[in-house]
Length: 290
Length: 314
Image 1 (cartoon, helix red, strand yellow):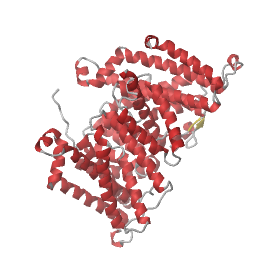
Image 2: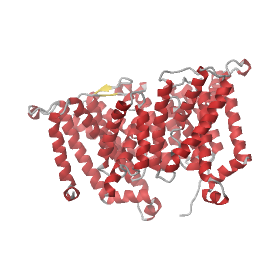
Image 3: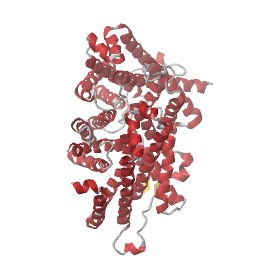
Image 4: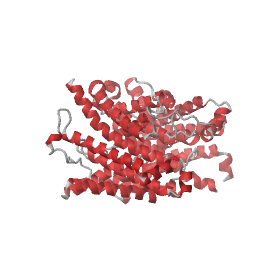
């Protein structure tokens, strides 16, 4: 029983990270109808920058803030400079551009910061009251940070004018443009937010799995499984999906398949969701008049 | 130019004969590189049939490449089948695997299919490494694949095992391109283009979408599987780490750079994919892939229809 609770808690910790990545994927998908393959690598690059700042002696929470803001700006810049020209291009061309971005981030990460595995410090380890029977201090801190960030994003979308404008641009870009919303800038904003969310996820996962260029590859896949499970058009479904994926991954890894088949578990989860429940747990089945 | 348009296969056959003859002048390493270009061209052609012709994006063809390579290795080394039978058998195994993958793929389109197939590409190296099947697959070390020697009568002409393999690859490539060319120009090709461009109208006209979409997945997988088998022969071994997720990405890049839907463009795509990373390495020791990525984005910006687009505009 105790072992089961341990696995469940580990699942919730991982799940909070998959939930954030899934949320980032769904946000970009809803706004631009493209899935950002480079999400993982962008998050890894942000984490590398954070590592460099920490090594230079900048205190942790300052680094956190600086990296999140820089990632936001970089996300906006990438959309404005690179992706805007491909908005109307066919799907495949966009996929190749995302692949190009993925490769560039992966390579420049290794170039600027070296290829060895790096240890990444956790800000929560010294705070001993965070550590409970089933969660390490970093685990509890990680969940708190993730929930806080998700709450911030939720209130931004629900209560602020800019959030409303973004939702309008995603839902009906033509009407939004007619009302005076600069739809293209809303897309850039969406990218910036997704980059920032990804950076936070990277910062939270780096202390657990050591920091190197391939850190987020598997996480991206789990994020996608989470987004699919929740229904690709429902951001909060992605969050719930993330926690489910995290728990299932840990339970299956501990009791059924062993740790070396984790990616296969993600694959099977994706295939099962697609064949049995294509609209996800919370999505609506949309019937279109033809 | 007209001769090329009206008799494409005469020209292709002549080009192949010339290529084979010139191999006597090539160093062994260059023969290996050209061999890999042919292997990649067949694989890219397979992916082009799926993605360019029928519109289903796949970022997972590395999985079929790996399955073809491993099937060939297991059939020749463990089951001791003759290599001439093992290559088509590997293709058949991949055909079945492709159809199995095609079924859940029916529910997806565009980016979502790309990401789902990417999951396949990421999972395959893990699966191949697993202990439960390692007595067949050789586990982490993989299996060694030996090159078959040429038949004794031809060996005296100077056909080393490398050149014999090169000759086989050229013949297989020619056959596969012929089949793909006829497929894309015939009734099946038109059905697939209809499914790609107007699936609802195609369904309304009575085309069985599920049947054709899964079939082309199988055919595409078979092409890539045969390419994998030839690749295994060229490299000399198969190991789980030879088929990273990046291989699938490379194949898709080859398709888009060469040009979607164009059979001949597969060769251009294969040449790009084989030689541009080497050129990038020569330009920048430390971050060749950054240059490769920049190249991809530049190509999409300047040549959105790929290299075949240059030819078509004329």
